[in-house]
Length: 575
Image (cartoon, rainbow, N blue to C red; front, side):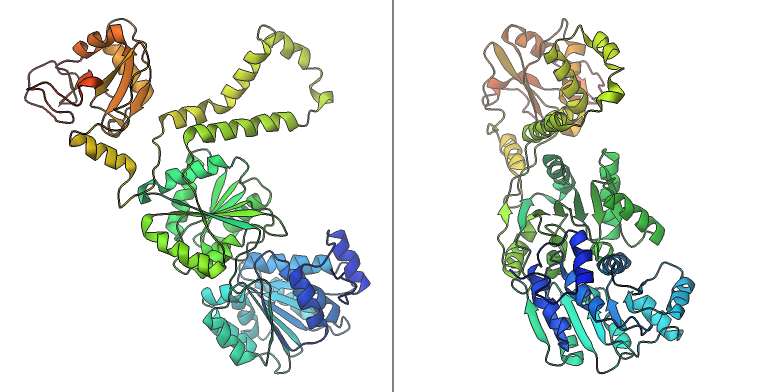
């Protein structure tokens, strides 16, 4: 493997990048740096986000600057303000020991007067978004006549954002004899048009295959009903306790709604989309970069140019219409040599898109089932225990408090203390998943759950109904379920509010419109007789032993049938 010195990088830049942690050149840097230093006129570089592109063009650009000529010599165009600031910051870091070099980020959302004053004092490198640069050109406050190198970074994203005419306008103000470097993750037709129009026999450098996904990113997908997508998202997030991710949504409205739901449910999340002001976007991005947010919910446009190296997961809350955008989304993780995971939550009609994306990125997706509640709780629990093991203890600060704490807890055994700590942290999560309905994969337009219920209405025994009761217990059917607002706690309360004496209720299985519960065999007839003839909110309550399901007595009402005309005691009950 070649070193930066062997690539021709000067000692001043070598020193700066060594302090930044650069040890060996990455593949894209090995290919691009010698070409740019050798004054190759035009270069097309196809490489994924996070592969070291900024250093690949930034290092030779800095090295080629004539600091004595106080005029723009290099122009770098990028699609977003965030990427503009990121590139300018990186170039400043690379040039720490290069004296007198001037770098200016030019973007909308900040004072144009301040940018104009800096331009008048003189700069060597301009990093700009197209709209603000055109504004400065029209005001005649910037001259591009001495620009010898032009870089289009994230060129495909700029075209997707509608900057094609702006790029044409800017290029018309550059000298004909100039080098042009085009960086892109994908190679759509619009990029090919630019290369034919503005580039002369360009050298093409491809890291990996065209449009290929990053090598160190795993691609997973979960298939669910559209109505279950948010619940599936919560389970996926809970399954990865240390997730630091970006959730991509299709519209601004959906982005805000998902972010609001996550925040209401107690997650460290916030939104990033075009309806936010620049100040709001800066605030959200600051929180995310500082890890004060665990989840960033974003539109594709808002997240373009987002440069955060340690994103662990990308979650696609549905696949984009333009499948090449998937490459950009997944490229936000697995950066700087780290591994990452790209997850897609899809419905059955999107299954064909998975095959198309696999072909596009030359990667196979792994199909996964939505994690079960008990698995999630176990994973969260062991992650918590791992944190307890590794927590840094400040003995000096807490030493004086320990005697009082020990006295307070001395009546508890070690096992009791551990149980209480775990319960304090996880009771809410455990209770949620005890009551949560499982999420099943769609099959021919209906879930396994819906199939079970429809079969039961025709007289067949459902999977849950066929389960045998525990030894010493009887299994009882009741025609209320989750659609009635029932959960295990309310059902137990309902039983004990009406049956004399305390009823030790065993296993409870909740379905959509009915439920099963188990009680000791010697109390079963008492429970059934208690509810005979009872009404709940004008609906006749049906409570009977589960073994009677398949052969109801002649004349009995079928399960699920309402009977508002029968005589009996009526009682309104809210679950």
